[in-house]
Picture (tube, rainbow, N blue to C red):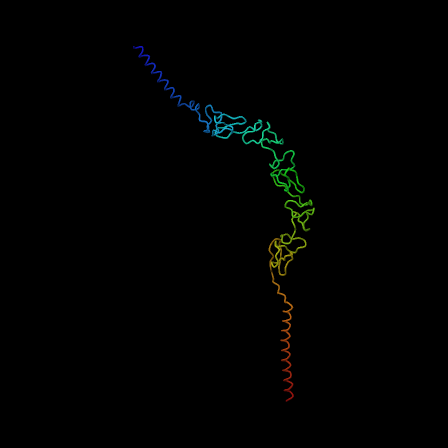
Length: 278
């Protein structure tokens, strides 16, 4: 009987020790790692990745295992597609198993196409769009009259080559001024604020009455010093008389003069009569 009781006490003690060890184990970080929660953004325990969600197809699947074609270097951040491994995954548009450019698939696994702003081997230009008529056509070939010095930037019209393209208003085959077409291939006209050889003024508008006429001639009483700036009016010319006005002034003068002559004649006649009476 005593032996039985001893065994019972020993069994109870053993069970107590097992329970204590279990509780310590449950509270330990090691146990917490074994029951890590996939998708919480914390890489722990048996997890090979944890990008903060439980979605598959983004590099880290619902069991926090790294998917083929991806690298997941840090917990809580998106996984990265391995460009050059031959697998098209994630944001990759292509993957030929290398990281070479100029083979249709770029070193970042993006399709190399005309209009992406990157000049490939078969391209002469690439202005970042697929439009024609702007210097670089839809096949990334250079259009006549343009230069495209930098990839991804707008092409420039070649002023002076005789071709009117782009923003040019004229092109006479030279870059001379004062011949109707300026050195920047813009039309030279009265009112553009630029003083041409045949102009005596150019105040930047085509209005008359402000010192510089609509034909860019300096008006009477005005001084026009700086092209593109308003003229200064220093004097106002007297208005010219019309023919009718001039005739009226002349008639008035003749009437006044005749009255003076008539009055003088009467005074002279009166003096003669007075002398005779004496």
